[in-house]
Image (cartoon, rainbow, N blue to C red):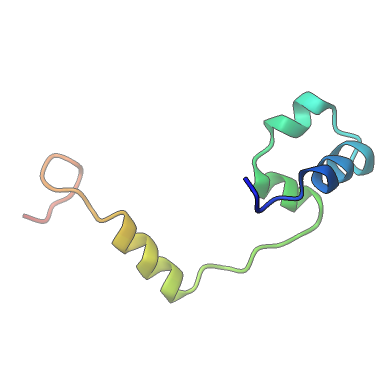
Length: 67
């Protein structure tokens, strides 16, 4: 992934937080961001609409009462 500065993240996680390599690589990016003190903005209406468009409710047999 080109969106991550892996050397800086590895230094922050392993040197700054004292994580072992196994613990570092076992984290999700969101977990690492939380541990580093970063907070994500809450989802807004546009974000919800984008998720609904990308993952619409399924049809019959998928826990959906709509026909």
